[in-house]
Amino acid sequence: MPLGTVPLSARVSSLLGFADTERRTAASYERELAEHRVTESELRKAVARDEVLLRQKDNSIRQQKMLTEECHHRLLNNLQMIVALLSLQSRREANAEAASRLSIAADRVQAIAGLHHHLHSMDGTPTVDFKPYLDRLCRDHSTMSMSEERPDQFLVVEAIELRLPTTIGIPLSLIVNELITNALKHGKGRITVTLAPAGKGHALSVSNDGSELPEGFDPRACKGLGMSLVSSLAEQIGGELRIDRGDAGDCTRFSVLFA
Ligand SMILES: Nc1ncnc2c1ncn2[C@@H]1O[C@H](COP(=O)(O)OP(=O)(O)OP(=O)(O)O)[C@@H](O)[C@H]1O
Ligand SMILES: [Mg+2]
Image (cartoon, rainbow, N blue to C red; front, top):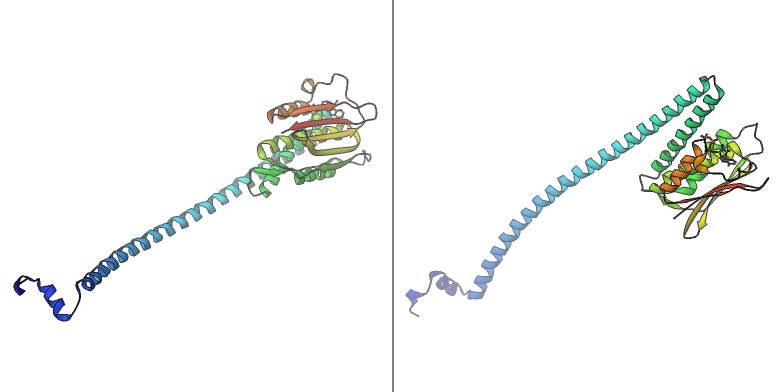
């Protein structure tokens, strides 16, 4: 090739002693480096954007926790206020029967408040550890209901550790509250609260000595509210209510079998 037809850059390189391949590599490195710089700057911008988003997410989680906490406190305060109002009205009521009804209503609301307190202590999980709840409920009943007039009565809990979904735990807690209240009110002697495996599921029972139930006892036909509540809540959780009437002096047992 005559010298005039060779490109100037090639002629300069050949004069300086660079090979063609070395020249191409140096140029491609420059290009690659430039591309990397662009990528790096884009990545830095993306990381900065993600950091802002993460901070926003942290803030909204904190706000949500504060709101949940606030709602919980308001719920408990309102329930306690209802308990206090019902108790006050019960104490001021001249009619003994009405006073007792108001006091029972206060105990029912108190049981619901106790359960919410227990659920909250479990940090918002959708399950409830039922044994500690039962222990606490029975302790509360012992303190509230055991009186000097009934020195024969005492409560015993025989329960396995069992974690239940709240959809079952909440109705079950109301059921057991009614059954314990009834055992204290209508029974005598030892009251045993049992939670144990039964068949493919579990059984929650409350038994007490004395006061056998009348023959043909129908929980849905009772005048009181307690047994109707127990029946419909047992149905709500797909459970079965079993009643052992007990013989004279022997124990009466109410059990709810659930899966
Ligand atoms: N553990 C028990 N031992 C003996 N009898 C019971 C027992 N539980 C319930 N009964 C009988 O069943 C009836 C109906 O109970 P229920 O809980 O529905 O009404 P209550 O306790 O009388 O009133 P309330 O629950 O509305 O305060 C009671 O009045 C009582 O005669
Ligand atoms: Mg009752």
